[in-house]
Image 1 (cartoon, rainbow, N blue to C red):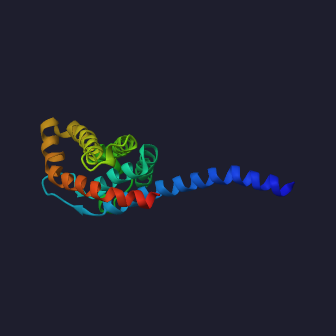
Image 2 (cartoon, rainbow, N blue to C red):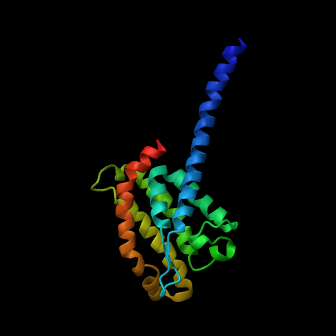
Length: 190
């Protein structure tokens, strides 16, 4: 009787625990990938926003993990970076950095990961002809949030010229790279 009860209890509890631990591991992995790629940084002398690998990570994490886990991963990224871990571009962290010129982009990461994941869940990334659409949508969300934050101090025109325009070519490359890398990311997640 105890064996039957124990095995039944194990079957009922462990799969849920296992799925929860798997989700937690994937969320943490997405957070760490974003923190790692934030260290790939090119400073442009004419803008307060550096070119980083973060946006590539945000797009890939959202599409590979889905909307809920992508959102959780980027929220954890902001939380840990805001608490002072060196997760942001150039090994920066803390509230002072978080509240700086890149805050809009960082907040945009959360929304972009959710949107990219949501569009991926709807199957847009399943075909090569449409696989880039979730990544473009996520990139536009990041631009909108980042430029809106910059516009508060620089004005709309200057925010666009310094916070969007310099990044378009590089972000198109990141979109293409994310489109090509997504099938590999799926294999890792599965």
